[in-house]
Amino acid sequence: MLVATVTMVGALLADFVIPASAVQHMRNDAWPPHAKFHDAQYIVMSTLLGAFALTLLGQRNGGIRSRIWTACAVLATPWVGLLGAMLFPRTAIHDPEFDNKTVLGLHPQVLLAIVTLTLLVLAAGLADRGPARSR
Image 1 (tube, helix red, strand yellow):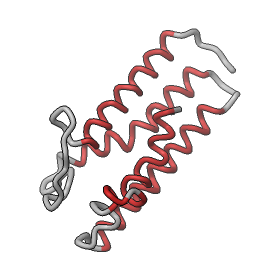
Image 2 (spheres, rainbow, N blue to C red; image 1 turned 90 degrees about the vertical axis):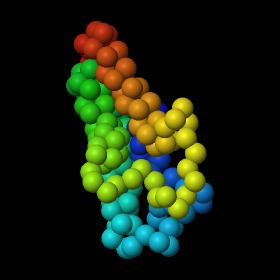
Image 3 (spheres, rainbow, N blue to C red; image 1 turned 90 degrees about the horizontal axis):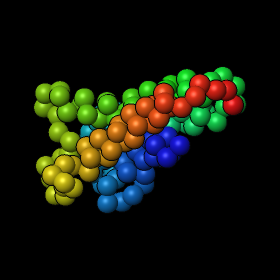
């Protein structure tokens, strides 16, 4: 549920609400409207995926193992998308005009994606180890 909540509100907060990071995204005057459109698209997508996963995890019908695996797959989508976007030509994890700090040698978004995906793999693995049961 933690990853679902972070996925649901994280992009909105980081890219639009929190001034220190929003100035690098939706509130960046150097960004053209189409770049802001795609960031807004990502914010809406992440919010919907997080809400969908929370709804799925909160259901009482069906097997919990199946719901956890499905929720993990849904929640991995924006994080794998973030890492995959770095493979496209002429993309960057941040704009060069900003002095972005690193954590453990990684941009904070990359580190967050790795941590989040690791948590999802662990959750799916734990679901597989537990008994198949309905709630």
